[in-house]
Picture 1 (cartoon, rainbow, N blue to C red):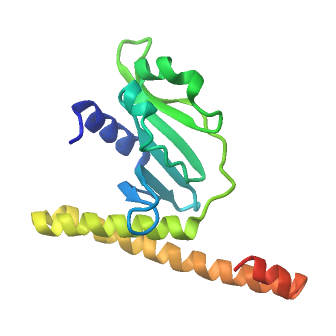
Picture 2 (cartoon, rainbow, N blue to C red; picture 1 turned 90 degrees about the vertical axis):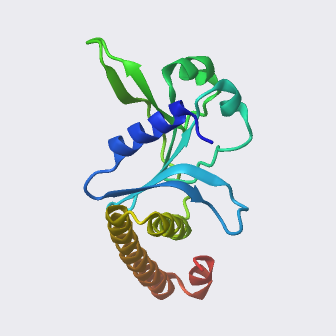
Length: 192
């Protein structure tokens, strides 16, 4: 069961990231049959960038072996500022951090206080498939709850992701063919 603080951070990261051209999904299962872990929140945008967010609310949560699934182009922790102050020296340099903090004007800001570095080893095709699968799970939940508005939004998101996945598969195939023409069969096989 999620804590109130976790639910609050989920709402903040969702409202901060989902905009025109960006799609988000909570609890994206990585791999098949539960073998690859689960990303707390993942976004995919029309520029083909995947971002993964791991929500941590306590030091013990941060130190647990669960939930450090950084498989996106850019990866972030989402945590309270107090926790960040306790663990900032333990956060890998390539991982960014979002947090809620009190601004100098007296209201709460939700900001990226540590920028991530780009991960160059990203399996976008599979990540999109995992995201589609997780969105499909959410649609099933919506159907069971009879929330028609949620169901419509989820179906739209799935359709967009499926189109994007088809486009990426086509681009990959074109790229492989160009590699074959220019570098030969061995280079082509390495891209399989």
